[in-house]
Amino acid sequence: MRVACLWFDQPIPTNKIAELFLRFSPQICTRTDRAIFVEIGKCKSLYSEDSFIARATIMLRKRNLSTKIGVGNDLLEALTLAIFNRHSMADLPLQALLELADPFDRDLALRKSVQNLITSFQDLGIKNLGQFKRLPVQELISRFGVIGRHCHSRANQKDQIVWPPWAPEEIIEEKKEFPYFEFYGELDPILFELKNQLDTIFSRLFARRKKLMRLAVQIRCEKVSTNPDPIRNFNFDFFTPQSSVKGALRIIKERLSRDFEKRPVLSPIEAIQTVVLKTIFHDSSQKNIFNADEERQEQIHSIHNQLVEMLGKDNIFQAELTEDRRPERSWRKKIDSPHESALTTPDITEFIPERATYLCRHPIKIEVTAGFIHIRRRRYRILNWDNNVEKISGGWFEKPVPETKDTFDRNYYHVEIEGHQKISVFETPNREFYLHGYYG
Amino acid sequence: MGKAEIVRDLRQRTGSIELPSKEFWSAPNFPSGVARGIIVELLGNARTEWLLKLLSLHPAHYILWCECESESHVNPAAIHQRGVRLERIKFVNTAGDLQQPLRLALESQHYPFIIAPNRFKEIKVFQRLHLLAEKSKSTLFLLGDGSFSQAWPISLQLEINYSDHGFEIRVQRQKHGGQQ
Image (cartoon, rainbow over all chains, first blue to last red; front, top):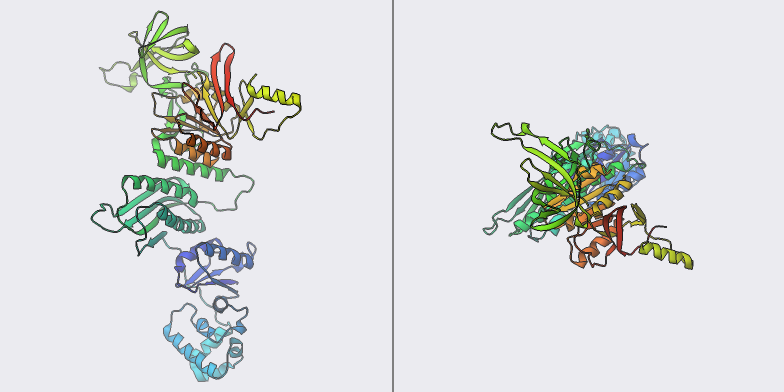
C-alpha cells in the first residue's frame, strides 16, 4: 500500500476538496478540515508518485491552496511525513507521536496523555522517533501503561489503521458570502466569483464522471426598501450537458446581463450560491487524440445554448422537411438537436417543382393585367409567364367543421418580371392572385 | 475577365506572381474563388441561388444562416432542392441586433460559412466582424439590398444576376485577388 497525505496548514473544507482526488483513486478519507488521504499504490501503473504530487500541487494551486504532501507505506507514515516535512520516520520529532496515536484528531483525552508522555521523554533526552523506537516496550508499559504500549505499536507501524468511510457530498453546492459589501450592480465581479465556483463544481463533476444538466444560481442582496428583489434565483436548464466552465459561464453571463438590464441591482450583494440540480453520467475514458468530433460537437452545443439564451428557443433551429406540398408548410422547425440529421427525411426533390428561395411570411395580394403585374401599387412588366401549372389543393381534414370550406386550392405559376426577377405566384379558385415567393 | 484575373495575368507577364496568403473556396461561375476569412457582400436577383451553389460545392462545412424579422424568409425546402443538406444549417432569427449572434458564431470557429442580411452602417461593426472572420477563417456573406456598402472592411462585393446563360457576375470590389 502507498498512501499520499495532503496536509493543509489552514483549515479548509476537506470533504469538497477530496472529491477532486477521485480522479486518482476511489480510496479516499479525510481528517476534518486538515488532511486528505489518497491510496495511490494500486494505480501505480497509471501514474507515478512524482506525477501525482505534481498534478495535485497544480490542482490545489489553481484554487489558491497550499499543501504539504507526504507519501508513505501507510496512513500514519504519510501523515507524519507530510506534517513534519521529513523523508523518513526515524527523523521525525517526538511530537509526531501525537499524530501517530490519534491520526484523525478525535480523542482529546488520548492526546493529553500522549502529550504528557512526550514531555517526559523530552526531559529524559529522547528527541526523535528513532530513539523512541529503540526503547524496550515492557518499560514503556510499566511507566505509561496502555498509552505507552499504544504509542510504541504506532511508532513501529504494527497497528493497522482502519480508513474511516468517506463519500462525496450528495449535493454539489458552492457559496461565497461578502461580509463587507464590496460591490453591487456590476456584473463583472459576480461573473468573476461565479467562475471560481464553476471551476470547483466542474472539477467535482469531472471526478464523479458527471456532466452538468441543470444549475441554480442565487444572488442574495442586502434587504433594503429600495430593492424589491433582494433574492434573485436563476435556473439554468442546459440544452446539452455541460462539462466546461467556459461554455456554461457564457450562458450564465447572457442571462444575468439581460436580467440586470431589466431589473438593476439596487443594493449591495451579500452572497452568491451555486447549486447543481441535475447531472448525467458521462464516460470519462481517455480522450481520443485522433478524433476531436466529440469535443467539436460539445462546443457546437454550447454555442447553441448561448444562442438560445440570447434569442429564445424558437429563434434558433434547424429545418426539417415535411411531406406537405404547400411551400409554407413544406418544412418545420427542429429546435432540439443542432446539426443532427433527421431520421426520415422525405425527399421531395423529384416530386415537386423547384421552389422559390424566399417565401413571403403572408402571401401578398397582387393584380395581374395584360402584360403587367401590380405589386403594392407598383407596376412590373411581365417578361415570361410559365404556363406549367402546379396545382395544390386539399387540407379539408385540417378543419373538420362542416361550414368551413377546403382550406386551400391553389394554382402556382412561375413568372419572370422586369429586371429578370423570378417570382412565384398562385391563383385561387375565385381568380385572385397572390405573390408567395421569389427567387434569388 | 474579373479584376483579379486581369491582375494575375499582368503579374504573370511581368514575372512577379505573388503567392496567395489566403485559402479560397471554389465558387460557381467565379474562377478566382472566394477567399476564406473575409466579408463578402452580395447583391442582385440571383445572389442566393449562386450562394446555394457555392455551399453545395463544399458539403462538409456547417452554415449559420441569420435572418432579421422581415416580410420574407428563406425557404429551407428550396435550399434542400439546390443540394444543400439542411442538417448543415443552423437558422437564427432575430428581431434585434445581429452583431451578437454573428460574433458568437465567428468566435466559435465552427461555422466556415455565415450568411446574414447586411443591416450594418457603422464602419466599426464591419471592422470588428472582419477581424473575427479573419481569425476564424470563416467567410461572412452579407446579403445586401439596393446598393453596395462603402465600408472598406468588405473585401469582396459581387452583383449576381440571372442571364440567359446562367449567372452574370459583376465584381464591384475584390481585395484579396484570386486563387492560382
